[in-house]
Image (tube, rainbow, N blue to C red; front, top):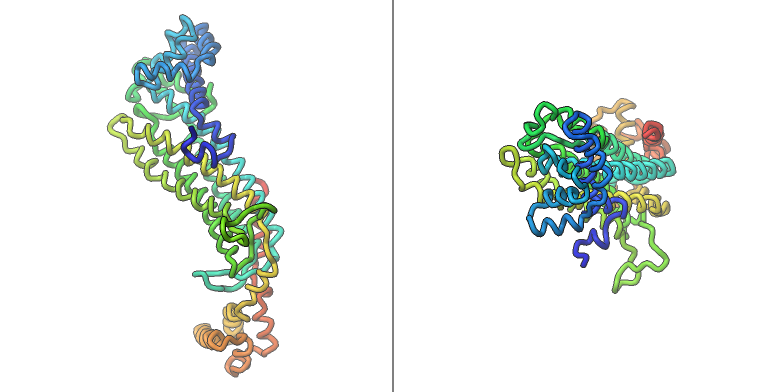
Amino acid sequence: MPIHPIDYRYGTPEMKNIWTEEYRFKCIVKAECALAHAESVVGMIPKEDADKIEQSALKASNARAKEIEAEINHDTMAVIRAITEVCGDAGRWVHYGATSNDILDTATGLQLKDSLNLIETKLKDLLAVLLKRADETKNLVCIARTHGQHGVPTTYGLRFAIWASEVARHIERLREIRPRAVVGQMTGAVGTMAAMGSNGIDVQREMMKYLKIGSVDVSCQVISRDRYAEYIFMLANIATTLDKIGVEIRSLQRTEIGEVEEAFGKKQVGSSTMPHKRNPIKSEQVCGLARIVRSMIEPALMNNTLWDERDLTNSSTERITFPEATILTDHCLKLMTSVLTNLTIKEDAVERNLNYLHGVNLAESVMIELTKRGMNRQDAHEIIRESSMEALAKQSPLKDILSEKTEITKYISPEELKGLLNAKSYIGLAVEQVDNLIRKLEVL
């Protein structure tokens, strides 16, 4: 019976598959095969036995391992016995020289490898959508807000570009993290490689070469969890960017602002009691799930503070943190990519909000021009500040207030004020910045 919403509500099939019990079992079996192969390469076990293990181990079943575990109460040893049973005489060499986490952590490395590949693909998909929307809207001037209040104008293209730049940095981080997170170990009990004699370093190298993942330099009985904490933090960082985008979409979809709207299906229902509602539920879902992903950071960090050469406190938490954080981040990436692809921008509302304050929000433009023409910058700031407060109090256009002040008109004519208070003429190099970013990031 499904209990966790990941079972039936959240997550993509391809990512959920990587974190199934069955897939992990296959990764563990693959790690055991790799160990036998490596030990045959260095002459520790007969090649024919290693070949037999590689050929036969895939017949081992997770169901049989669970039966054994029910008897012996040790999950790894249960898998070892399940593999041994199908390998005939060669089974004597299964897990030779290894300790549990040599296999378990190496299997985790294989799962992280596959997960990072999927996440990178989805980050690149999201980046492509953001760059496309940035290019489409680079000239769409809109009001910017600071502290929730109207500021000087910006463009929708610059907004999308800022998000694109952040996503591109996540791709860079992912590529930097991959060689640190996607690793395995074969160091034996407490990490000394004693059971393998002088062959330990060579066995570890050959084993990871076979698996096509990185290899630790040193370890205790487990791989140091700083590597995994970095992975979880990266997921939380990605989720937070998606949260940030979702918050902005939700804010801009408020009835009073109404500049954007999530796609709304023809038969979609917004409320069980208010038939008119069109809610940003996908963005809200992303924002909510981001909280869960971020909550995984503390246990991931604490998993690195194990007793001495190892204890078992990390094991139970990682059974939860790895799949949940990974699956939910992947889910949110796909969801937000869909939201942004289908996002409607209501240009009439954009224009309405742009002109809402009748030029007051363009006070900076006049202040800068006054300073250029000879007025002390601080004096210009004060007179424009006072004029802006007067315009807001009287609910009058700033142009009308400024045109009545001789200390201003001696520098700037009323006709020039009209141009300075035109929102679409005060976006600086927003368009050029978007174009530059698109050229830079198209290669990712």
